Amino acid sequence: METTRLAVVSNRLAIVVKKGDDGEWVIKSGSGGLVTALGPVLRDRGGLWIGWLGANVREAMSDGALAELLARGSLETGYTLEPVDLTEEEIQKYYFGFSNEILWALFHDLPSRCNFDPAYWKVYESVNTKFAKAIADNTEEEEDYVWVHDYQLILVADQLKKMGATRHTGFFLHIPFPPLDGFVRLPWRFQILDALLQYDLVGFQTVRDRRNFMDCVRMLVPGTKIVGHGQVIRCLTPTREVLVGTFPISIDFKQFADAAAKKEVEDLAWIIHANLPERQLILGVDRLDYTKGIPHRLHAFANALQRYPEMRRKVTLIQVVVPSRQNVPEYEALKHEIERLVGEINGRFTEVGWTPIHYIYRSLSRVELLAYYRTCEIALVTPLKDGMNLVAKEFCACSIEDNGILILSEFAGAAAQLHHGALLVNPYDIEGVADAIHEAFSMDGETRRTRMKKMRRSIKKNDIFHWVNAYFRAGIAKDLSQFPVAEFFVPKPLSTLSFDEPF
Ligand code: ADQ
Image (cartoon, rainbow, N blue to C red; front, side):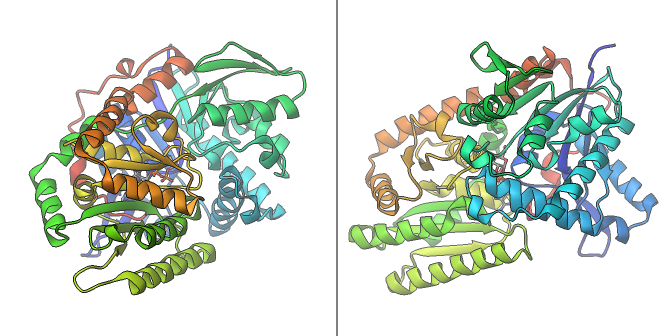
């Protein structure tokens, strides 16, 4: 028998279960980079998604009610949803602890933010075992391709092997892989590296990440040989042969471009601009996270207003911050810092009829998000480090008149692909970012269009389906067309699912 089904495994399931206004439990589409990217891939193909349902759902619902809700979710999405339950201690130590306080910070080159609490490791291991068990119970050796996602689940293939379950496995890291001198600080560096080498294929976003990984393997796994070159190479350790590739993730370009052209988006885009007339709109959209560089960006915007007074009254920054990891003190502190800075800058520059920064702290509806993408002339995407950054690509896809300008951090994975059209900046260089804002503000229409066209062409060609095909060709010598959309599903269109859930 050959591989005929996809089993995607990620920390969170692709859906969110929550109580509606009428007190009834409802199922909604999740949000965030992974769902945006993988939703269109699995949709209607009859595969399987294994992941955690989110806090407090299991306790609040009977098993029967949950099963019914998940069955409804499967009908809407066109794939089976298999939940993994986590206890409160597991959530604290595996998710907030090892995953976020250690791997997230270290892999984004911010070791000073790491809390290497030894208590986290055991729980990270046991939760990965739980996921491996769910995979072993719900998949078949020859039928399923098990595709594991991201830093929370690095140990899954290793745990599957330890329980004697042979599966065809691939892993994709959505966040950056750190350079050797950062990675070696990790007290569990050997275990993490060895676990990654238990997958059949390990995928990274960029050449930079793969190079960092290979440097670590060469240094920490003596006797390793690298064979081949190009997108996928073979890594021969003394005990294993692993494929290692670069697969820059993307978006469903057509879906974004088509949706941006819809009347409801156009109407809202018009209303936004009509309320902020005779000025260029600069957009920042980020999950609340210290890696996204929001305070640095606000300083740069203030610096631009200070040094280029001709921009005053002529630009407005719309900064959307989507709530994330709420109740974590560090994130609370970041929120306060952003709010203080917005207040300070507005206090300093506001004039009658003009407020320089419009600050939105909530999750936007999909129509709102697309309307902002469509109507804003400039996008300011300046993470301190980012695996890819889908907001940059979504902004370009929605710039259907080719008139948007993207200011993009050199340290976002997207820069490797979009450097021909974007204005690249070092997000730590406040004056450099301010200069780029001024350059974008002053750029003539033809240059804007030439740059945006290049970026849109590249994203259209290298869309999410291209990404998944490249990964499958490397992992199982197949492509997505060999997992055809099942005719017997009559899915509701995704637009009936909400987009308003915080990450
Ligand atoms: P994230 O850190 O989540 O992803 P990003 O790539 O920017 O970051 O994706 C954010 C996603 O959230 C976008 O698809 C966007 O549409 C969506 N979003 C934005 N605003 C929203 C809102 N108000 N409501 C709901 N959704 C909203 C991680 C890595 C990234 C990598 C992705 C995919 O950190 O570097 O690009 O995975 O691999």
